[in-house]
Image (tube, rainbow, N blue to C red; front, top):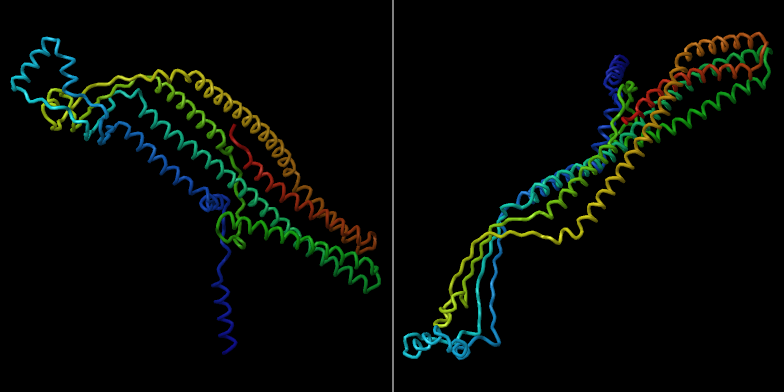
Length: 434
């Protein structure tokens, strides 16, 4: 009864063990994108864009200035100076008679001055400054997004390389394990022949050495596999040490090239900077208003009879044209034009590199495809040669080293077939749009 219960417990325990999860390369790419610190840049770019657009929209809000002034004059106007300056004029004589007969109480103006002021400036025509500022804010955000796209694309390319390296190493390890089985079988056969006196002891040593060398190669590859698995786990932020990596399908279309989009966005930003120079040389029309309350008043006659403060308001239109912007316009246009030409050169260099890389990829894929077409045939031949070598060795026609060589040839052919298939997939992911 006890044994039956233990058996049931072991069966259920085995069935409840979690199976290794399956992960695709696209999933690894997406996890690496989300895990990379650069992904946070998108949020910062969007927040900066919203602030820049808000600032550009507020260029149409009225400009308001509030201030105050208080002080004194060292040599203010006096009544005596005023009388001396106007006594010879008809208006002056009338003014003097009025003062003399007591009809007007005239006082010396105060040397002290004070006022509170407010000024308002409202754009009517800004020459396109606000609209251009909005476009520049959008263009700058697009440039920053494209820069982040380039960084994350490089991360994805690194994931691809690691992913395919893991697949290749796993195939190598599988072939080594199959080779080990054949070597151990051959070693047992040599041991049996040695016991019967049909083989030499050095031949058994050769088989032992071949088994050890195969085991050492397996250990080396398992160490490399662990390194690449750990690197993939660090990039994706997920433990992928035991998950099964699914072989991806061939990529039918070339991958996009974010570097070209980045250059296009930079070109667009330079074009808007050129438009900004055009805005700088256009006239502006503004509605202006100026109001203040204080002493002295603009009404000089009221200041001569009283120290009381007064209020004044001015409303009008102001047309302004900054002609000094023409001083540097030609040089600035030349600088922008040279920058655009430099981007054109960078784009031509990038496209040339892409064409060269795609040509190399196409050539390599053609070579691998031709190898794949004959791999199965080569494996069949190598298998027959290995089986024939085993029979020949049993009959004493060949020695152990020749048998080991036949085994190596067969499993190298099997390994090459696996490598050709995976490398062909890897090359398809290297093609990029021109």
